[in-house]
Image 1 (tube, rainbow over the protein chains, first blue to last red):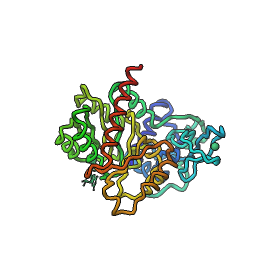
Image 2 (cartoon, each protein chain N blue to C red; image 1 turned 90 degrees about the vertical axis):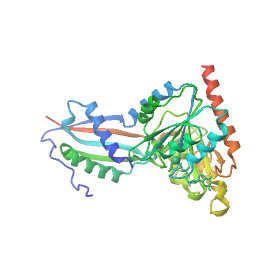
Image 3 (cartoon, rainbow over the protein chains, first blue to last red; image 1 turned 120 degrees about the vertical axis):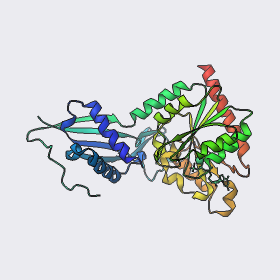
Image 4 (cartoon, rainbow over the protein chains, first blue to last red; image 1 turned 180 degrees about the vertical axis):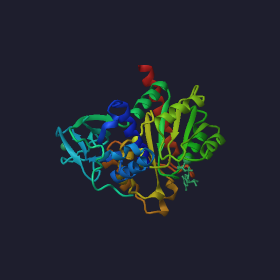
Length: 114
Length: 238
Ligand SMILES: Nc1nc2c(ncn2[C@@H]2O[C@H](COP(=O)(O)OP(=O)(O)OP(=O)(O)O)[C@@H](O)[C@H]2O)c(=O)[nH]1
Ligand SMILES: [Mg+2]
Ligand SMILES: [Zn+2]
């Protein structure tokens, strides 16, 4: 699995996006769609491992939020939640139009005040 | 590994906390490179071949090479965690191949393909196969700049895989049921697996193939030739 590279990627992205404020980050929230195949516990473990390399990150809290899969049915013009990976609307029609569930993104960053 | 019970708070401010709601896509870098690959290979069909370890990716490409090398100019990039064996197997059947040693990594990223393009001569190539690392999970999330993703599922692996690894089947245009010569000996229902795959991906095509005995190879080769031609004509149209 590539959890460790995901976690590295999180902090590289933050360093690039917030070069001035990076040192003041206290909390990071990552959203992972169920289709991203990301396991929150493995991300946490990978983060613990990264802290061994980068002790300055030890005060940062990392939260991983799983997002359910949502698809859109054109016939009903409605969104529906995909459960047990059945991409089928209540009306019986299949749909591959994914509205949510593939994302892997940083959704919230908290900085300490100065 | 122990998860902290209390939020770590040494950095916690005495004063205020500033919160930034944002969307920073973590796969953005990969998608950016994938786009660059597509732009660099406008008239070549690129197929990303995925499966579990040992489902028969290299065997299928070898047999495809034998059958189509006089019709289609083919090249292969092979991802392998540690060795260059699969590239050697492709060269044995006269197909230009380059190994991408992923150094133990569980998937290929677009950046590795972009770098590899500088080390393989693709002049006149119509069809570029990328053999991904054997893994049905991680490669699903990485666009390699391919036109088509094909996933192999061997008869010996069991017919429950589309539901277990939905993203892979969701993003594939074709599911190849490989090692079909073994179907009589294992509990594997082509019908059931096709139904499950189509619940995940209603438009997925399915072909059963035995690279060993040759069943299904004609259908597969025809499918490939059609796709190669479609790519070419779409280019002319633009
Ligand atoms: N019976 C049978 N065996 C096959 C067939 N295709 C491949 N095999 C065998 O399956 C094994 C693995 O085949 P490979 O082609 O190396 O599989 P792969 O997917 O490239 O493997 P990795 O690159 O290691 O993930 C070999 O021992 C092949 O001989 C087939 O159609 N029928
Ligand atoms: Mg192989
Ligand atoms: Zn509907």
